[in-house]
Image (cartoon, rainbow, N blue to C red; front, side, top):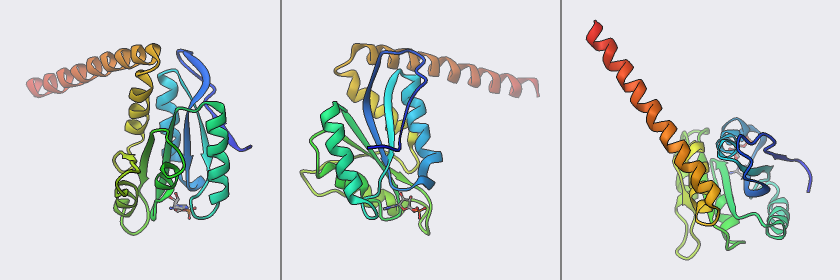
Length: 181
Ligand code: AIR
């Protein structure tokens, strides 16, 4: 299958093999979806983005899943807006863990996508993150992979320490400004 965008830049190259397949329903979703790829790349996790719609190109979704299984992809992320059935359709065709990323847009600002993604029937789970929650979709994929890949666990530790330091520094600076005033 062509027209996939793989992560080329990995800050810490732990594994060049694609571990995460990110599917999204429209090219218009890409500005939000690329943030999933970027967060994974920062953690040294190779991923690929595929534009395929559960409604417009269902055959393409299934063809990608077939390839992903053969190539050893470990986690799938389904991203879509409005009637967002992509993650659910993926979950119906795989045993791999599926993360749903509902996207905003449309008349309901993402509430429609959130419900369409999260309200799965018992037995077919989709781990759904917040509307436009690109970072958490990537972080959840990383946590799943960390069970199997120690280097990803290490990358998550390092990222958590960095975030903590940044948070503390921002808090200190904000408090210092209050005291100066
Ligand atoms: N979509 C595409 N096929 C099925 C769904 N649910 C979603 C896309 C996008 C929204 O419909 O994920 O968020 C609108 O798509 P477009 O291409 O009209 O901008």
